[in-house]
Image (cartoon, rainbow, N blue to C red; front, side):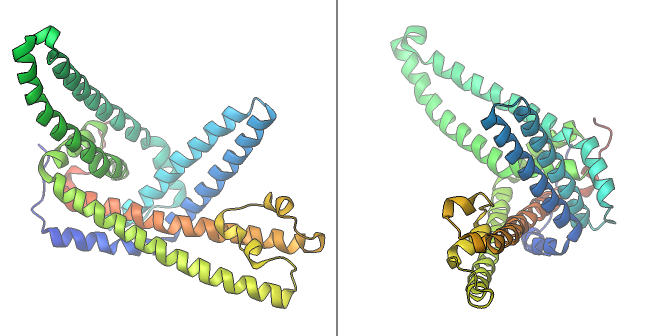
Length: 314
């Protein structure tokens, strides 16, 4: 039986608000940045190979997914260590733990998907019984009148459970060392007992992440605009400030030729694009780090810590 601690919701909310401390977790930040860079590079290589018709495109795309999945889980493990207040492991240890345990997330999602498929099949079967040709002109409409509220409420709750519980909290359970079957039971217990609380806490996590993203965006835009203007005035780069800021929006070196940059300035513009790309990656990673810590905080706030360390499952 999964034990739900009798925690004050305000205490759980305070744990969520403390998720901004994740910005100081330099190890997790480094792993996320490296994952973003490696996955992005492999994706670009896959796109180039597919355009050229090479055979390496699918391989490189698979490698990008592999790096993104296991790298993201390694960062999540480091964030979970911080959220639990335990000794934070080294990056190499986190990567090894990710390679050994991240598959639990896929297995748990597969079991949850099977449960959703059974629910969908049951709902379709009920609707099929409502057909006049099956149940008759009297019983069919009566069954349909019963199926409508059941279907509306059931489907709505299932979608809410998927978005508020399964998607955000399955990975933190794996990062905490929970086995597959225990994790599925935990998610089911949260849906049965704390669905509204989890939904509100995840809404708070989303708002907190959006707030951090807005602040980071303001810093990047304000700083980028001023540095671009100074670059034109001091360095004497003869391109528009907007082109110098292109890297801050995720554009790469391919934009040089398309934008018609002057030959004499191409070196400075390329350097600005590379530097802006680093800032762009950092601006994406920081809110993501806060979101990961927020999901870990929600998971730990609503589950008994004794239920989060089952290593007997595969």
